[in-house]
Amino acid sequence: MTEKKELLFDQFPPVSTEEWRAKVEADLKGAPFDKKLVWRTNEGFNVQPMYRAEDIADLKTTDSLPGEFPFVRGTRTDNDWLSRQEIVAESAEEANKVALDVLMKGINSLGFKIKEASAEELAALLDGIELGAVELNFTCCPRKAIEFAKVLVGLIKSKGLENQFNGSIDFNPFRKALKHGAEFPGDIAAMAAELLEVVKDVPGLKVLSVNSVMLSNAGAYIYQELGYAMSWGAEWMTLLTDKGVDAAEVAARIKFNMGVSSNYFMEIAKFRAARMLWAQIVKQYGVADEGCKMTVHAETSRFNQTVYDAYVNLLRSQTECMSAAIAGVDSITVTPFDVPYKKPDEFSERIARNQQFLLKEESHLDKVVDPAGGSYYVETLTVSIAEQAWKVFMGVEEKGGFLAAVNAGDVQKAITETSEKRHTDIARRKEILLGTNQYPNINEMAAEKIEIKEGCSCGCNHGEEKGGNGLPTARAASDFEALRLATEAASNRPKVFMLTIGNLAMRLARAQFSTNFFGCAGYEIIDNLGFDTVQEGVDAALSQGADVIVLCSSDDEYATLAPEAFKYLDGRAEFVVAGSPACMDDLKAVGINDYVHVRCNVLDVLRDFNNRLLKK
Image (cartoon, rainbow, N blue to C red):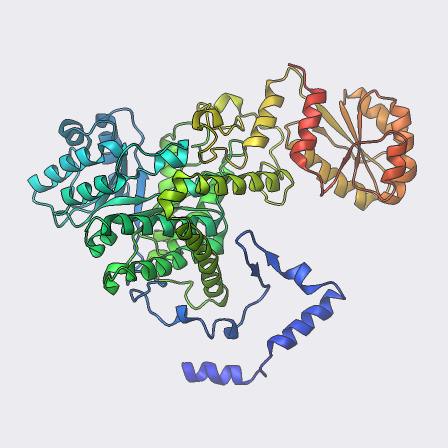
């Protein structure tokens, strides 16, 4: 078969990169190649429009196989990841009931939040659950972690399952500083060392958390999450080896909990790069190759989830889950689509489970190890994202390590700056959230379905709770959601009338653009088939109670149509020109000051209109 393929390719003359480039530049007809086709990513490097075998010829990352150091192609020789569900319940008994139910529906990894570290609560929580047959993960207050570990280990030993148990305790003393800007009140290294001593007889119990999903959900770029995650893991290695704990034992107890954004290929590359970087870091502590494997759990993003058009969250989380699965993570949690505004219900949790099962049972992604391996694009991305993350890692190490950086607020500050930039990019539509800042469902009302008020759609970072030094909490859509909720809460819903006239192609295109633009604020849109005169259009708009009239035509026609319509309207409604015509200065000279176009900050413009139009 190989020989036949070679004969087939022999029929075609080889084409060099230079020849491809020349052909592309000819088709661009003078337009700059780099400006038109090169993607300038937020990750600190550019992505080319095409890659060839020569681009990965010198990459050492392509030399290993799945299961081989440095594990860029995976830590296993299969890809059968665990499907995890977080159990949300008010009591241990209720959580147990839910857990037993979902275990019968295909879930093989459970996540619990522990309130009381008591044997009675743990027994009630795990009643009827076979400890050696399912992965069990627990989140609790860091100050209760040692106490809880003793209870859990005692239960495991009582059943003789020390070597069969698989799970984790999310010991995360960095959480307080990251979320609230306050240092953890205790000796982290001493507590961690004691915790390792407690669980030493249960090799499958991970207790040192690297919870970089917190950074991802705060809006971090992919390279930032990866770089800080590596530094976080290295901090555990340093703290505990300085305490005299064996490096291999420390590495074996670390579990990475990482987020997954909708940047599909970049996320695949992130996890591949993460395994490679982590193996190299652990190796420096004198650990054997086998001990340098990374255990990573992936959780789909909350940062890009939306309240409006919430079913679009399913599209985002599906591609995110697919990125993690293809990248070869150990387990995945798909965040239910309704998390931004309510406690997940039976329907949303079932859909979240089925999103993973679809990739296993229908797409068979669990049957293929590292399907992205050898891809010119993904292999290049893997190395590029690793290089950028390593710069972050080295920067943190130069400042004394992750703990020092977190206590100084450096990590929180960097993520906050990124989050602010991303919110600005979303406001200007440089970053698209379908259904929020582009192609909104104009007639949807969401106020009544919101059950969770704080951290949902108020657009507030709750800085007063954190002293301004914690990670931001506002999702990407929060500003636009606050805008639409203000529209819903007002006694009047503004009406926007599209006054289409003149050039057919331009008026249709600009009416569509303006509809999407003002729809992001939840305004009522009145479109039409066009008018012969501006007077006819203005009269029709006023007869329908329009608050805003948007003139949609061509740039050439605006010079005469816009002043005529503005004068005839005479202040009876807000007047807007769709576009950024060359005659804008002349139009402003007669008093026309409102324009909507692709360079606008959509959020700021709509906030201004809300201030003008809404009546409480």
